Amino acid sequence: MPMEKPHMITLTRKLILVATAALFMLHSTSAGAAETDTYPCMDELEKFCKDVQPAAGLLVACLSGHAEKLSPSCRTKVELSLKRIEEAKKLCEPDIQKYCADVTPGHGRVLNCMKSKLELLSPACREKVVQFGGHVPKKPASRE
Image (tube, rainbow, N blue to C red; front, side):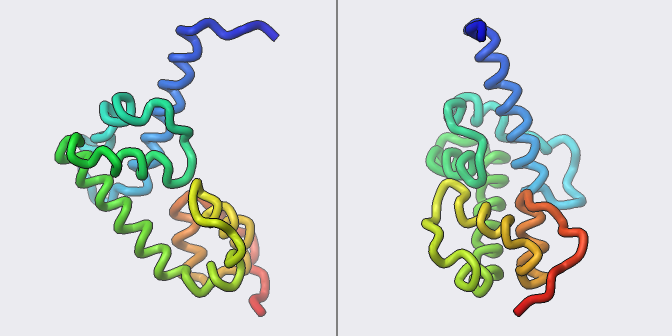
């Protein structure tokens, strides 16, 4: 397999960052938000988090670690994302305890576990998991 040229690696990394930033902002932007502030963290992602793997929560964690250096609009988006993550954790706590209690938190492991149990989750928790990148099941399974 041929080696990738350094400029291709950089371009690939930037494309991944842009795609991830778009997903990050999609999940943290309310339905009525203005189009102009859709990507307020692009510069910060490139500056502070370019080596962070785009995975559940890792980019938000990276950005929040640089909160004092973020632009006001990016800081607002990060704070909103952190708030939504905490709300989802509280809402899904019973399901997390029931289906993913043995999973070590961090690096998106709990979210991945919840995605794998999506059809078993309570409707409200299922909705939150889908908002964070889960898939909608075709037919909910019966919950025990």
